[in-house]
Length: 284
Image (cartoon, rainbow, N blue to C red; front, side, top):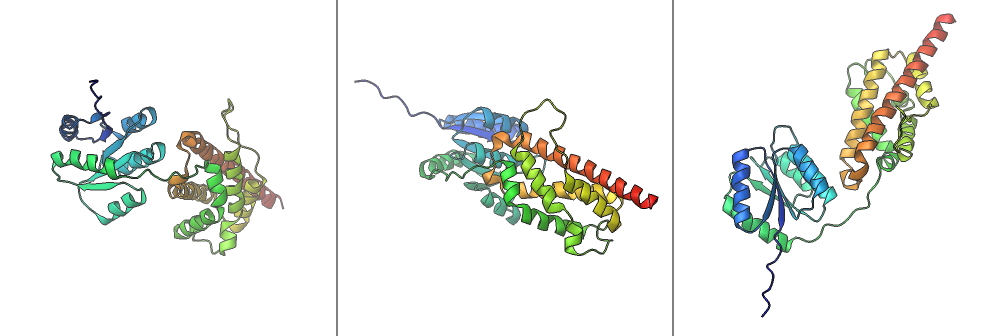
């Protein structure tokens, strides 16, 4: 009789910054027949996720930087959506639990727990888990294009909360100015983004220049222009955070670099428009 080959071991990525805990969990899983690869930090975990295939992710939630566990879960969920994802938390706080649900972690394991039970849980979950539904991926430009209205609304909320910007009594339309057109220009830049030897691929933006002129007439200071540009970046990244399930992570880094470059270019052009309006006012 020909001997049958044993089933292939499930490959597990184990992420925990505590050396002792990581070693103990790894040894327990390996004794139960799992192929375990460990990572002591998020950077190492992300490198492994993008270079190797895994059946299971087990990651601690509360590592040195806030949200680190969620970062690892998000990356695995998008790069390897069929992998089983287990999130280990030191305390079952409601906010973390809800965020984990939104990230579609398969299970939240609350410390302290019986490590020998961990291998049984992983085996049970791998047998019963259904393949994840695959969502159509989008470039950042496409996401921003369909979210222009919500970005403007989110920016307006933040601008009204700013003591620096809210000192000027403006209507909502006056306060948002050319913002929707600036976001549309940014989305267009991202849709055309490609590798280049240039320092910047940013194009002249008439809307950015007109926005600077408008801000001068409304009584803005240069510092206020810079502040509202920073709020725009924060709002855009919050929008991307809420659309993580649609992001094409393979293009994320160049697109994020293009966002920063384009917003900086728009701010420069707005500042030029502002100074032009100020000089014209002084000459009149």
